Image (tube, rainbow, N blue to C red; front, side):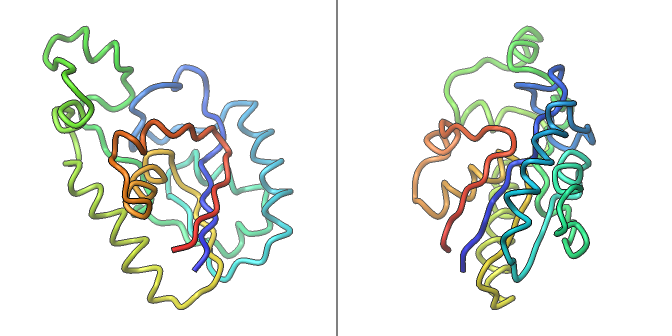
Length: 178
């Protein structure tokens, strides 16, 4: 099974480098241009199944594509929910002096919201349990950088910290065989 993973296009600059999680934000002007270019790339590919995060930034990223007609929107592809840290930048969280950064795993465990283990289980279940039951050859998934990195951690057998050091730009396409 081949999966074409797409990170949503660019959001407004105010949301760059934030823990955006479930914030239902849209694309920037540049993001809409990226989405149009993305559509040109994707529209020439035949997918057997197509899925997209139900958050607005992901939906807007596919709206210029012919694939939008047959895509299934799901909350299973949402970014991690960060609770009270939703929409905040790292420095702003540190400035609150409630949490101190010691290392990557300690940090993500200390942040509020969806427990990280539950987030990883959600990603694993969707990609490694649900998608294989569809018996499809080529699947499109439009989602978020965190979801893609968690999946890469799982399938490449690398640590979360290693996966989160992988640069994934807005609008990037990554093709993986699972």
